[in-house]
Image 1 (cartoon, one colour):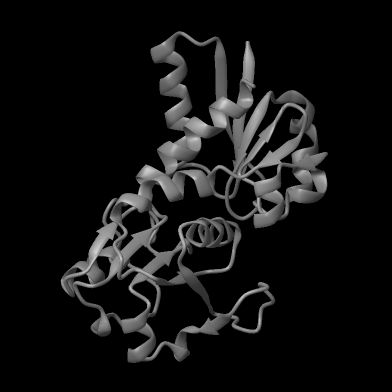
Image 2 (image 1 turned 30 degrees about the vertical axis):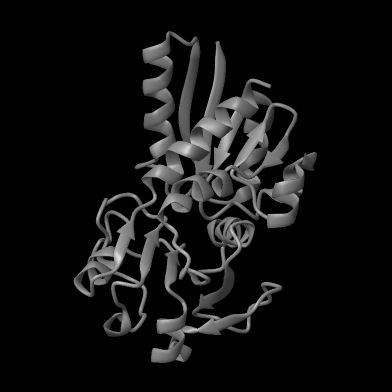
Length: 240
């Protein structure tokens, strides 16, 4: 039997755990996938030798880097990892899942994007949007944080900025189950039908962020497609 899992905090509602458990049963694969909620990243050590591969979720997509033997080129450029193989090489399949899910939704007027958050998911989204030809700005509660790219605070989001940046991607956990009554503090009143709001959160399917956008006529998409894409890419890596 092969052993896989996901590390993070929290992981009780992990999509990956449900996805791979169902996949193994459906396809008759002799493997097991477990959730490992770690109080701190240092607790990863016992699992490094035990697992044939694992996923990494918040808040450890960057903290995991010192425990790896190497990174593939994409993960190195992004600076965050969500997949690790048996040889402890880190990969980022978030960007693959994100790009494949948002590409069909983009139109010619979608040239500028706001990325809400600066964590590991935000870095993958930033990489993906750049590959798709969009110019991006990070939005953070700590705008002085060194991201290597332009970062502004939520209080800097003027009507002009919102109207220019017609793609807005939420990479924060705001609105995630069970705290579903939260959303990023952007000026939703300036949104229009020209906007595309993408939420990396998938549970619930319609977050408050997406609901607020839809009320202003914006197109919306949750992160479920991104998750399916990154999971299949992870399985391919584990079997190479």
